[in-house]
Amino acid sequence: QVQLAESGGGSVQVGGSLNLSCAASGHSLSTYVIGWFRQAPGKEREFVAMEWTYSGQYYRESVKGRFTISRDSARNMGFLQMNSLKPEDTAVYYCAIGTRYATYQSEYIYWGQGTQVTVSS
Image 1 (tube, rainbow, N blue to C red):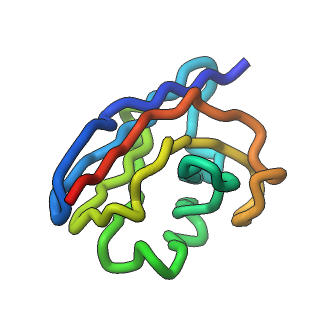
Image 2 (image 1 turned 180 degrees about the vertical axis):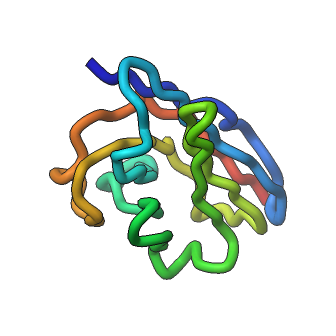
């Protein structure tokens, strides 16, 4: 059983930065696609970014140039560096892993519990 644990969320002002971490246990992340999703209050959970060794990184349009997804295989961790944060980035952020390079939530097998990101003006 794979377990994922996010950390690094918090409250920042507009323009600030946060680096979210996703620590995995129970299995190596090396063969999985790592995805980040978010859910804002009153909204459905949405895709943010994904990364796979063989296909690179892919982002939703609204975060391109501001967010960077990465992984550290030696530490069995994934990351989401978020810069130039905006109020509309406020959400609970989830990391997930799957075996297909896809933006659909249904393609992801294991999920973390989420970490809150709040951006205030």
